[in-house]
Image 1 (cartoon, rainbow, N blue to C red):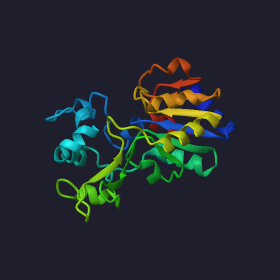
Image 2: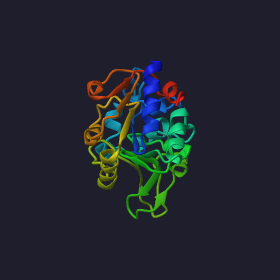
Image 3: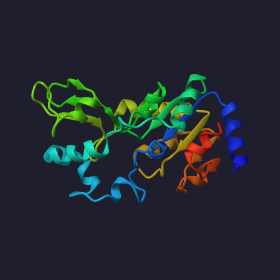
Image 4: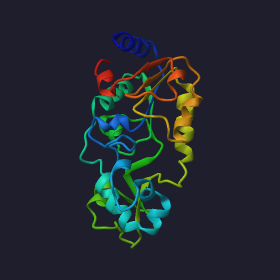
Length: 238
């Protein structure tokens, strides 16, 4: 393991255009539950499966129940960035890390100080009235009673990508450009099973593809360096 950590450090030192691609595992060490682990949201018991609750159809047709789940399980305001978020922000400040591409919606990368973050699945920090498009922050939504309403009377919707909704075209294009131009791509905390997001890593053309994840993934054989350990332990050594 020490040899792998050293190789990672050497590659970071050699590189000047690093991109980090992350998933739920980046934030679990901050205390935010992931989706697919044995303790994840998909294995908790509700009146409806989380996959159904977090769908566009369910939001439109059962908005009250959607918000009951959303406020209970998707509120990231009480969590703080962990060592991985902090080290990535430091690498960006040093000019080495050019972008973070994340599947997370918790806003912890920005809270840690990262500026160039492409949020493929949106963010709980942004919310808009479906009628007049007025912006509302996360505090307003999470502190509202039942369904958050705009002053115009419209229903407020989180700017998160629900099932049955497409990714934002501009965000995807920016992420593809960043990955395609990277001289080093670090993938961390993701099983790479969520499409189309995970398909973006196919645009990487370099030879420093690093995969850091506790468990094996189907992409391990394509990586130039695989570290099966916690992100926190790895980034604590950088």
